[in-house]
Image (cartoon, rainbow, N blue to C red; front, top):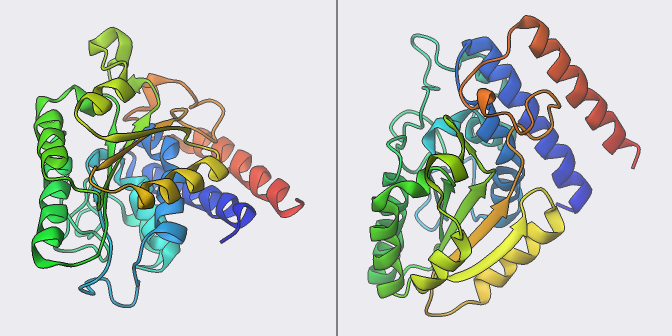
Length: 278
């Protein structure tokens, strides 16, 4: 995909986030929207995957370590063709396979069940080690929240990743600076994030997480790195794409009501129309 196509797709992913959380009357739109561009790039440009064969042996693996942002993940998977986009309206409904957190047993395309913060990166490290031991060339990607990296387990996993020289592992941090209780600087600051990963012997890349040129360059650079895992620190805006949600911690885990849904979808429709005129 070219940059414009990626931007259009990311806008559709954002529509999916709003639709799913509105239908569920619960969920986590803020961090789903901030990561929408990352989800889009991974699933439409970067990863070796096949929606028709979700379990193919040589596929790249992805672990959503911040599993509460499942609405964004599901919207990307649906738009990529792993399951019908219409099913997003069943999010968190009784009997739906689209649970509040990713479930590898029931959702096509999900490689790891996640949600307990800090554990996803450990699973990703295990996958990357497995590839090295078996001589496979698939790559492993994991997306963490910047609040999530307050968890000690993240750094235990990072230490092992560097020790095992996992150059097939890419850790992405969605650095939107907000968690459920407010700014990460006020709750328990993890800054400087880049210097911490560097201290754990990661190759570190800082980017604007909404700039597809920067995203593209970062993932291409990661593929050139040998003997080290890569950490991409993506500076993002919580609630990106919906004006009244942007930079508001209150939208970490709140669903839009009918009026808010209408306003958000109108904004995203206008954004999509503008992209079509470019």
